[in-house]
Image (cartoon, rainbow over all chains, first blue to last red; front, side):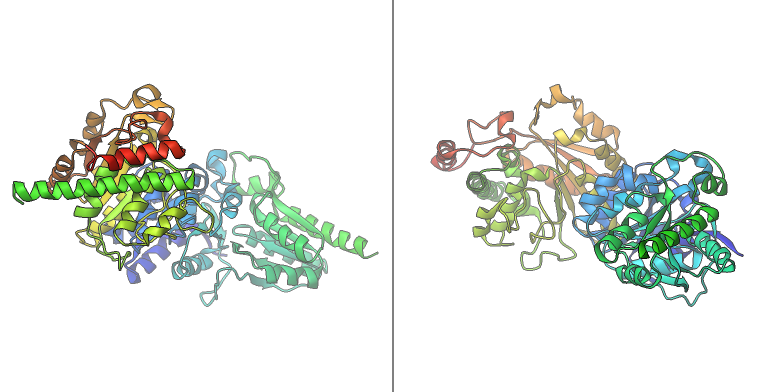
Length: 316
Length: 282
């Protein structure tokens, strides 16, 4: 299976889109080699602006650029975009609904051995509470390119979250990607795994193992956390009766929180959230971190069995 | 322009500044809330920009080639609202809806609600970064619009101002003109007590900016300062305007207390008398 970090796909997508769309402007905060905006910088130096290590300034400069009708992509790491520059995002991008795309690498534990300072595990929660914000984390390189294209076609602020580490390529080039519309990767009626970003491939692994045990699990790639695909969540609740959310983020206010909100207001079924259990992680290899923090395939499988058990209990 | 015409122009702009001040006091009095001190200190500068220099079109507020204006010290938007209304961006009657529910005139300016507002502001220390972005695009698109950013002195405490100052120098943004309303008072007290800014001109020079210092209440000096700024090449320009907080309302002048409160009826009448009693405020 081909392994590509989604930040790499983002860097390539920017060049492709930048070629066609001259309104694309890229802002970088001195990490272009890491965020891969260096590809755009080399191809279109006149539309690339390196603001130095100054993310707050970067965000407000982007607001000014968007106000002239351009489409700025702000590149940095997820921790800095969501926390260092949070108020700039909220007041100067989201409040005036400016057409700024905040495209960030190092989402979740994929920052791995860099440690907690560079692992964004609260960013989705922060962005999710900001009105007018759209939040997308694609699962692989193919959907990353489609997500970047879709975000350019959409008028308004978008937060795009990418991985530092490699993730498997899951989709073919003919994938249809629509903001706010989840993708059903596997059909099943015993439970549903609703997964995000790098965790989608883990959910697929769990699906395969459970299938061998005779358990049919639906797998949804919920690439857009906001606005969440309510229809698909409710349908999953009605048709499969149990849900497990899987995200590389704190379980508070991320994908799990978003799904749980839909469930409690619409169709009550057992829900279990896989993710960081309201703790900071540490330095280490990505796979080892997922295992230590109970976010790996075995944990997903256990969670599926747990919610299915609760479902049966509830029916009695 | 010969000296005679120049003086005639200055007289006209002084009248505009006086009308701005009267309407500022009126609207803050009616709203029972707002920021008079810093609105009055930039009234002369706003008069010169909005009634002389700025290329804008009230019929087409989002005209691509327009000069941009960013009030980084967004709390002093009463002066901006008045100027926009007087230029015809929206009816003067709307001024009485300042800070009222369902109104367009928010406590701090909202670009999506008010025609002519080029950027939402109010949270301090942001306007220069935004100005950088607009000026960068002006250069990229080879447009000849200017970007004016009015900064408060207090907000120069924000580190982001200096991040933005470095960026403007990097890209030699000579289409960017920052104007510091240097009234030397911030909310808690004198700038030199709360957070010393001096030597302020040297700071900007050290950041690569072309510095012009003027008396921010002398219309001719304001005009000349902006004309000089327009002649500068390859450097961003800062005009340090020495001003008086609460200018032209005797009991508000140099008083921190008038940073953000409305006059009562008696105070309102005194202010209007002072502004109207003498024909020109000087």
